[in-house]
Image 1 (tube, rainbow, N blue to C red):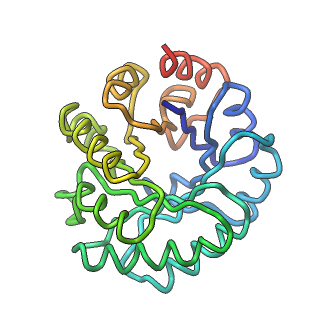
Image 2 (image 1 turned 90 degrees about the horizontal axis):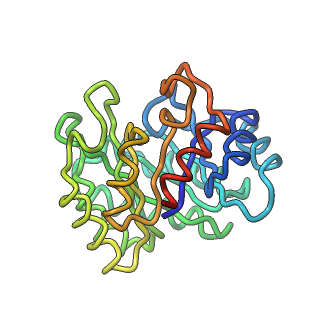
Length: 234
């Protein structure tokens, strides 16, 4: 299982790399769970990350605006990231999800960026589509993978909303459809061994990699990342 760490700037990205992160994921937590960063920040982080370490960037907690979202995907993909993560926050149906996903994949394909569709474990609280529905959408749209995160960080982490069995079922279904699968959502260090049991390809963290465990006010440290990497590898 790969460890994805989400820095907000170059300094945090350097710490993530020093700690052994497998994927450096650029995001802006001030704008939400999958808050989008700025193009100049993404570019500077990509310049600082050594070759051989995968990179990703978030597009935001998206509304149903395929044109706007695809334009953002095109811009981010052109910067050279390996993965684009799109949060299906304001998506209410599989029809909307498929239209949006196809637009994102088409926008990114010219740059070899892989699209990951992210749903939310707490989707009933925000009225969004279930992440389980995104698996079939991902297959039909040609996405690389699917992901579960949490939208409302103050309402509990991933394991507060979905059981390990439900998460395992999600991972197995995604794999059976040829998709990679990532799990995230206010995960603490003690959760990582449980997440590993699900068979997920990637586990994503920010708060757990920050001093004080605070995803917004804390800063990522190499020591915290190294500790988490050991848990993932154990």
